[in-house]
Image 1: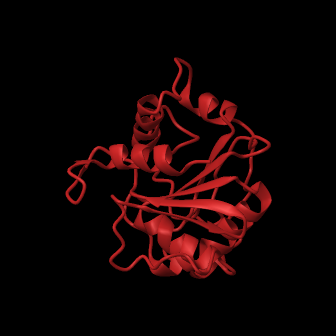
Image 2 (image 1 turned 135 degrees about the horizontal axis):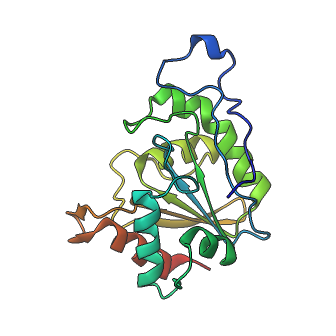
Length: 197
C-alpha cells in the first residue's frame, strides 16, 4: 500500500489557523484504485496512524472483512488486496481529521470537495456510504441525498444519483443496531446483498 493518492487535503485554505486536532496537510497514503471501481466505500475519518489502508490493524478493516465474509466475497489473503482485486475501494470523508473523536462540522464541510472529487474521478458503479458522518459529507458532495436527520441507518437507503447506485447504511462495526436487532456490520451486509448491482 505504498502509492500516495493524496499529497494533502486541499480543503483547508490556511493551515496556520486550523484546530490542533487537524493534520494539515493530511499525510494519507492510499493505494492505486482499481479500474473500474465497482463499489466505493466512504467512511468518516482516518483515526491515528491506523486506518483502512495503513497500519497493522484497523477495526473498520476487520469489520468490513467480516461483512465480505458473510457475503461470500472473502478469501484467505490480506483484506486490502482482496478489496482491490474485487474492484472495491475505500476513501475517508474527512481526510484531515486524524483523531478518534468525531470530526467537527467545519472539518466535514471543508473536506467535502475532496469527496466530491473522489466520486467524480473514480466513477463507481456503486457508492456505499457507511454511517452518519460519511452521510453528512456525502450530502455536501451529492445534493439531493436523503437527509441525515432522523435517518434509519440500520434499514438503510438505496437510490440512483448522477448515474451511480447509492447505498446509505450504518457504519460497519460490532455494535448492536437496536432498530434492526442485529450487529451494525450485519446491517451493512444486508444492504450490500439487497442493493449492489
